[in-house]
Length: 349
Ligand code: ADP
Ligand code: MG
Image (cartoon, rainbow, N blue to C red):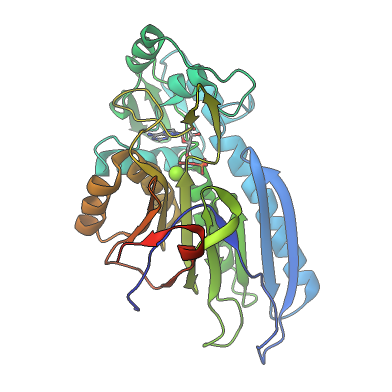
């Protein structure tokens, strides 16, 4: 493991899959699609044939669309929709929905509720990312908060779930992470080929099998976006396998009276988290965990977030509102290069 890291925001994959520099020929295909309310792109390379790569890419797209239905709050045919509209009755859901809920509750407990999968009433109230975005009245926020609390989600076994206290589940903070782990599993479990996969699920990047077939040239380089201009990177994380997940205040937001209201809510206040951060990136073999934790760390802010990472050995990059970039001492199996100096960022090593 190499030790460095620092910087942080949305991620652009700087380089795709390819055979250059590799002595083993790779056959590469790219599948672009829209799922989970965002644009996704998956590069798949096979060591056997173009058609094998294409088949795998299509399978991945289909599986992610299936997950979208299972984890979406708005797809009426989906399980989460069914659960949220069951008026508090025990409801049977699919394995995907149940497992994602189990994970969401695990990370809610781990983060002491900074990540909370029952933020749906607040997400609806603020409407961020929709045409109805607005600053609600305090009385509305207070009312919505009475239904929030991950303890209201009861997993009863045998895929049965019950929501107490008028709770509504929103898995927006973990769904793409869950999808990332499924993509990884698909590539790992299909031993008919040697796969190399780079999946860009919006701000969640999932990697499997290295960029090339040859060690030494097989790391992917993942850019961490500048929060003020996410077409540019202020750092690059380099690793072979696993996930790099970013949450930031520049993804979905609106501005009113010069103030930015974004889509990551502090469950303690019902307002967009005002923690002095612009973005958090987590690098971890498990992307479900990385996704839940980026959201939670954003809510915690730098000091609490750093402490949490040290205690739990999490590799993370924080970007603050005053353009400081911090990295944890744990870096996972990646190297980090800071590029933000010319854009006014400082790497606080
Ligand atoms: P993105 O969806 O841009 O990748 P996140 O992973 O941080 O960003 O998820 C933000 C989404 O998670 C919000 O749109 C909302 O649906 C939900 N959410 C907001 N605040 C929280 C929170 N404190 N805990 C869990 N989920 C949240
Ligand atoms: Mg998240």
